[in-house]
Length: 363
Image 1 (tube, helix red, strand yellow):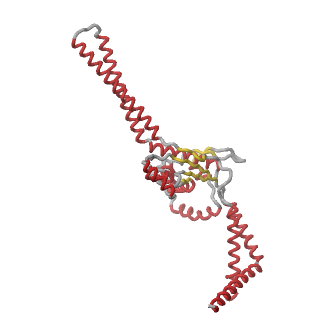
Image 2 (cartoon, helix red, strand yellow):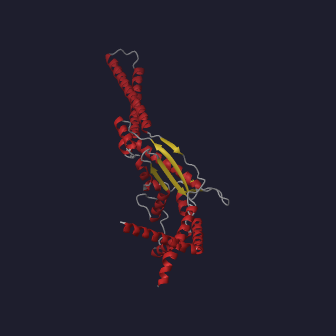
Image 3 (tube, one colour):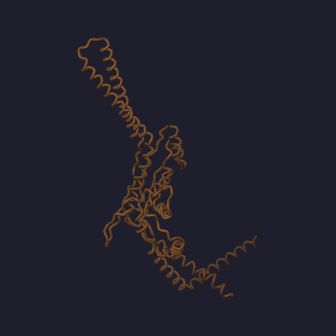
């Protein structure tokens, strides 16, 4: 036992001596470490300032969720305490908050944003411009200089493969996108995102653009269209019932007016007539007018009920955080990039001093 303790202590001393020796070697080469770190810092600054600024606008909204039954409410509370979400089981809707990101990222939703007109932020040399999202993404969105170099071979290959020009009469078809349209959809998916808090069902919509004003305007449009999509889905059945009730009411109204007019015309042409057949005809026309009125009155009540049903099923969204024009860019994080390059430069130089140089000296 004593020998094992001595061996452990001697191994610890050797390890400590080795660490001190490594530190001493690095200290002796501190000038080289500083040079490498400085060069890495310069490279990091070049990279950081080459990346275009990005601005992110976030909107938080709390959608209304159906399901007020006592049993499901209790289960939802228990699930919330456990850190889970019972939104899907608690709602009779097929589109509940957890599916909002999928709805937002769908091809029809993204292609619907192509023609949205947004305003650019005015600059010193130019005024604010009204431009479509597609035009802004294709013409005004900048990329780092190395991205153009990396894409150059692919552009040359594409030019050599085909010289066909695009169809000038081409219309956007979400069912069959062209290669350029598909790339634009993928680019928008990266810039327009949504997330859902599983505990609170709060939906957060994020839009990242290189123009702060476009980011805010597009985010507001995305939230509005998402609300419209969910509202249209939730009220679809109620609106169809309302349209059908209004149709029946219009027909009943027309029939009532015709029956009333027939009864009035008969009375005008048969004043003072005491024949039994005339009285029977008058009673029949009066009964027809009364029945038509009752039917008209009943369908009018159904229209009011259908209107109330549409209002009842229309979801209400509480906007927690509205869209505002961001002041500070969300990317690139220049300090983080600079610190990362300095760290990598220091580590690379230390590895060269401690491992690569001794190996080269042995050879």
